[in-house]
Amino acid sequence: MSFYTPHGTAVTQTIAITFVMMFFFVTKNKRKRVWLFLSALLFLTALVCTLTKSLVVSFLIGVAYVALHLKPLKGKIFTTLILLLTATVIAFVIARFQGVEQAATFVGQNINIVEKEPGMVNTSINTRVIICKIGIKKLLETNGLGTGIGGFIKYTPYANMDGSHPEVLFDLGFVGFFLWLWLLMGAYHLLVTSMRECRNEYYRRMLLIYLGGYVNILISWFVTFDYAYIHIWFYLGIGLALVNLAKNAPTETGADLPFYHDDGESIVVG
Image (cartoon, rainbow, N blue to C red; front, side, top):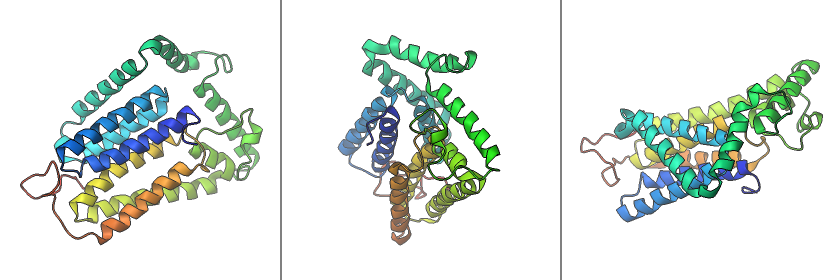
């Protein structure tokens, strides 16, 4: 199911990049790190080729989150993002060399949609504007209680909903939306707390990179899928397992890990 829509492919690639980079930062073998880094570039190329702009933006924000919490990159976040953005553009041009003009036209349609009348161009932005208008109307009609689980989409001219957060709001109303945010923010708080309290450098690094991927998911879910899809639950399950492993891990420095500093302090900024 992960490859039957551009969004599905894009989400799968961002999760893959996250997992690859988790192991990149805890693998000391240089040859393995090279392969992991090349794999990340391959997944990044696949991501940009889906033309899913929202996932590319949320992915870059996730990278910025990680860079802000890594000592080697904290003072170089601007340079890091410029290099990553450059790599993204190069990967896009190389992978879609014969269709760059067509792809650019498609992106341009989405950018200029705000200047046109609704319905004149069939783009994802236009679709979401229509859905939100209908959703707000239904919220007013139901006094903020929503239309029920899976009930909202039938009031739209579309077969599927693109955006977990809006769908929760329109389906379950303000009460359900509050519980949804409580669940997601509670998971984020647990992950951050576990990372800060962990005294095992291996798991501190793993948790930080994981958090970068989680930030990416939280942002992208505004315009990606619906809350019934397995991606977010799968990702949360991995995170909870990682938290349990970190809690039971012995205290260890990063002496046997790459990018280690002689001062013995973690490279992860709590």
